[in-house]
Figure 1 (cartoon, one colour):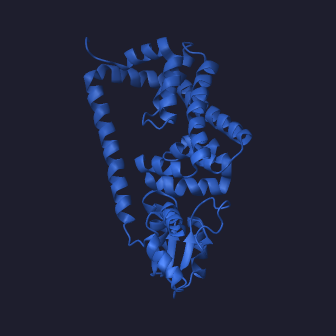
Figure 2 (tube, helix red, strand yellow):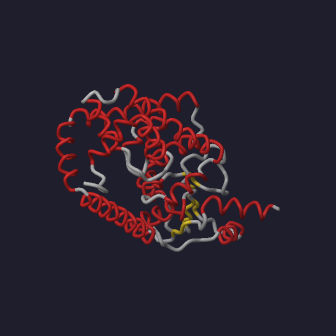
Figure 3 (spheres, one colour):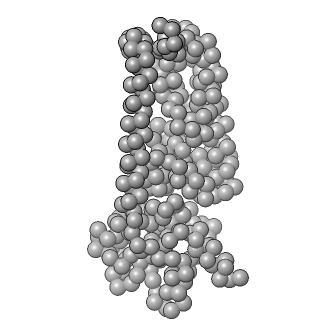
Length: 313
């Protein structure tokens, strides 16, 4: 019907411009534009099954696009450090994943996390800059980035290949829906984004706990009140004593080491993530363990750095 965009039209367009569409779409997604690539990869697999696309060329387009976008973020992470993660996490619909899941995965597997990062929602956006900020070598980055991209793209393309007949049946049904399909897709997308937005708001409300300012912490240190300071950063090798007397523990470490935290001292938690999210989550964890004199450092490590510089000057 005139004026209607059907799945058949989309498949025809993909068949005619398949490789450039795959390249540009994956490039956009890996560049942090919220456009899911999985449906397109499944469609590419179905077209490969009917000999309308070449499998090696399709995978190569995806790998090249992912490599270009991820290398851009990797290089920024190398130059700007973890500060770039603040920007990524601030615009993410899943800030909890940015804060905890990514650090835990990199802490456990290191650069090997790039092998699975594209399969994990919330992790894909921050994996490359985090790898760069962790000072990984180019040789290791290239190995795991390319391998991970091949695994990711070929897995979904293979699924599309194996279930091409089912996809064609679904495509035929959706094509008959015409404009109803567009309305349904728009509605589902709006519901998904709305749900993610509500989850984000709920998460930010949960981490609204009382903070301590860098100036207040500095006064406590000067007064000799001996606060127990926990540095929650993932990578602290370059600045081991950035905050005087700080103990370095990750969020995961706290679940075990909380027993060694004194109950008769103020506990200050410092991180380098947006909204002091990791510190606030850690504060809630410690309070659930009976440690009540605990507060996140307002502004985190960056705020302390600004305060310390101004104080020294």
